[in-house]
Length: 158
Image 1 (cartoon, rainbow, N blue to C red):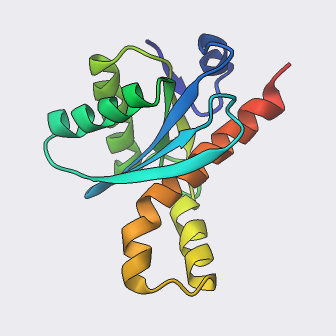
Image 2: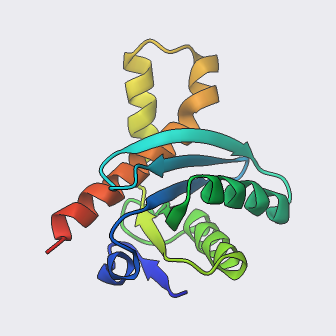
């Protein structure tokens, strides 16, 4: 499958009419996972996978993907504020390429700048403890990122 970058219309064109998308926010230590509904209106946080070996991480991801009968991936791409790609973005691209080597399905790299900080602010405003924020931040950031992609896809739909 081709690696669709940012808001590429080729990603939406490669998808069936209905089917859930799995959103992934790959970090150094954890991977936040979110899923959309089958109509792709709403993203919900699902879980956090603690990173270990890539093969084990992908096995856990694909288990969730298959259980939810997903039809594609949206992977967070942490660009720098000026739009350039630093080491974290290069790592996310490598993660996406390696994931596609295991499962050939539509995959979109989505700009996730500020998703973690936006979710952190929301949790602080909700008076969530530091411990609680640490437990949910990755999967909530994945949902925030996936919702942004869903909203953009809907806005661009014919």
